[in-house]
Image (cartoon, rainbow, N blue to C red; front, side, top):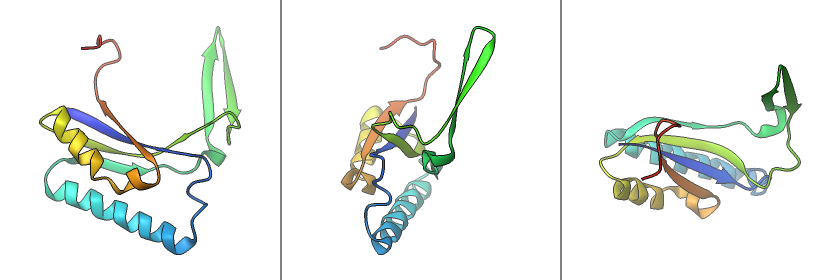
Length: 120
């Protein structure tokens, strides 16, 4: 089964610690991804840029509306993801518990599924 570990951050969290700590966090996350790769579980992993230059696109009726970031109403941001191929949900949860980002962010575990699929 395919799962996403979605890193949910508070706005400003990346800039809060001193640079040395930010670099250490990054290296820990790269190491975590490497371990998952070595175990054959990692399909992809990426950090996302801060939403400062992001754009939200929405279509209502016949027109598109675009809103430039940063988004003042955001209480949290998606900071990145790990795309995993796990045997079970429990395996995905165990991996999430081992993710270094749980120390400074929230890691959301979600199964990848078609948007029309009903909840189990």
